[in-house]
Image (tube, rainbow, N blue to C red; front, side, top):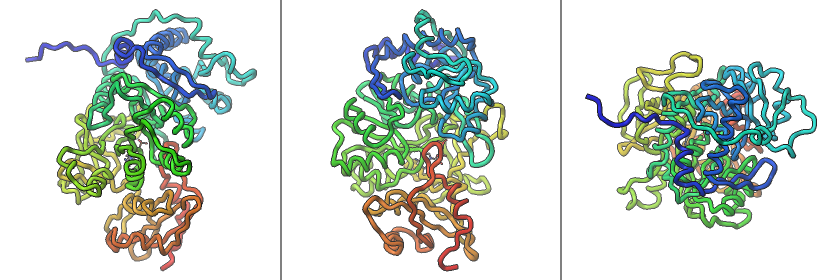
Length: 542
Ligand code: AMP
């Protein structure tokens, strides 16, 4: 017997229609590539998204076609999110920080029929255009005044000129909610990037999950600044989730340094922001060196890589901003867990609460988790045993575009490639990427735990821990660290700092101070680069 409820499809266009109706005058503010501040409302954005859908139709874009973007967080990119998915086509947000040959690979693999890009990327597109085999239309996301005088980009068109030629008399079509909506490529350590293809349904369900109080806790009360780029797993879904709840959105454009982010947070009375730890490092440095504080920021979501407990402490103790440590993957839309506290933990002392917050968090309804050993046998949720983390749920990928890499699932579960513990309260803690795990004498050492301790030292700004080969133990950990400007610490003192915080056999064998650490295109420490660089490293004891 079926229920007697409507089978209304879950469509992305309904989000912006709803926001127009219910939050029509709520603002969307963008710091543009050109440097000025642009403001308009959900109502304006909806009208422009409909107009843009007509522009796309005019360019010959049809349902199911892929349209690429190379763009920062801003209102035109937001319009593209809604116009492309709303008309039944697929937005392929390409990470401009990838190597040019990867960008070419992605655009060709996705078979993008048009490419929309910000002014910043015009020189890049000019270089790559001859290799972009399927792109028929190049649209620069700017107005006539900012169009380059001469450009080798074939048939270059101006976004605002195209918009001026259309009106907003467009009705969003209705279609099957499983229709593809957005496409993000994720880079593995080997091989080409693989396409994760979100549907309208998965995007809406994920937005509901993300908005929940124990997840991002978003509401029409909020002013939200996503520092996380719209080309990194859809800015962790904030352009959808904010629209769903009617939160004000504040887009930073390319202005991502500590001062610019701080100024925008203050000007636009931002209450919640989200980004990877490296971004917050810059922001915290700006705050401490300029002795400034936040007046409205209450929460910050930190994820993408492990948030060091020292960062949680600094935000909460020094600036009164609650940190939500979040974990997820491009393949998970991306949210999997968020580290919010339970009522029973409110009475815990501060240190105990910090220990809970340092974990990657609890699953959101819609994400099932399990940990298994090397043989695939499920491990208990005791907070101690660690194993490979597998997930399943309606916003988790079941495969990659064009079947690349084969069927990733194991008995219907998606293997995350992360190694984790889960405690009896359901809090998951990542100990490592499986390929970053350090194996010493047959046992695993968590590089994340060691990094967290290293950056807890007052003189250390950032640290990476990798395994280097050892004749007896197979691998031993070394710390590669950057000192804070004007601070000093010796190798011996940094090692002493680990004393009593870890088992003796976890003690790093060496410390190397460097001026810079390599990061990936999504701002994570690139352990692969470090492992290559230190491949022939000789430990002092050898
Ligand atoms: P991506 O798909 O590029 O966002 O990468 C996903 C991977 O980033 C995950 O599988 C984790 O290895 C890592 N990651 C994301 N969030 C966290 C976190 N809070 N702590 C540790 N690792 C994380």
